[in-house]
Length: 202
Ligand code: ZN
Image 1 (cartoon, helix red, strand yellow):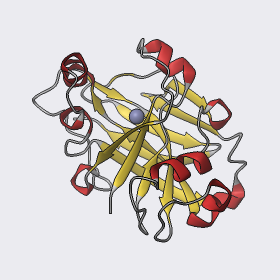
Image 2 (cartoon, protein in one colour; image 1 turned 60 degrees about the vertical axis):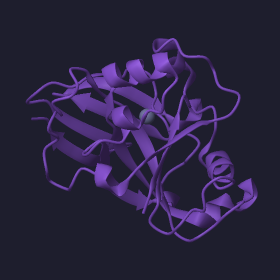
Image 3 (cartoon, protein in one colour; image 1 turned 135 degrees about the vertical axis):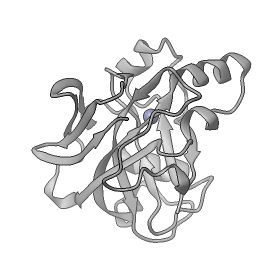
Image 4 (cartoon, helix red, strand yellow; image 1 turned 180 degrees about the vertical axis):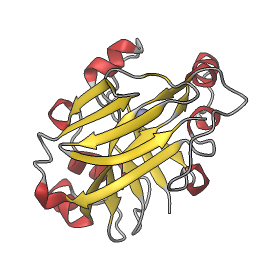
């Protein structure tokens, strides 16, 4: 499986990182080796002093598809989840400054926290609340109603470039409030009233 990530999908997050608003979704990939194994802590890697959390709504693809029309996109997913796109912000800043690819900052081992998935029918996908709590303090408070590109638009867009396969996961971008993780942090993610993940940082 592969992980397809969307960058800069919430206006307030674009502002907080002083990025330009893109004309099209920013897309990057993480390999399956980036997935943090279930029930394992996240170990801060030795190459970074500035690992940031980015809580994001996830979409799990349920069948193969390419050039998917936006109106047919709902047929390609049954489940919505929540995860964290862990980012080495210091490495990413170096990559950005040199115009280099982001993989070292975004696709390293453990950088993809994938929490629980839930049937999409139980949510209003255009008005879905999700949150990240760091040591019980609310640090990111998102709602899909602030997405620049909605889930179905993202599926249509990315499937022009990448054949989507069953089991692929799309990270749909983070809202404002990103910040640094520290040793011994507890990171809890919630969709509406469900606890989708609970991980420890070491
Ligand atoms: Zn992200």
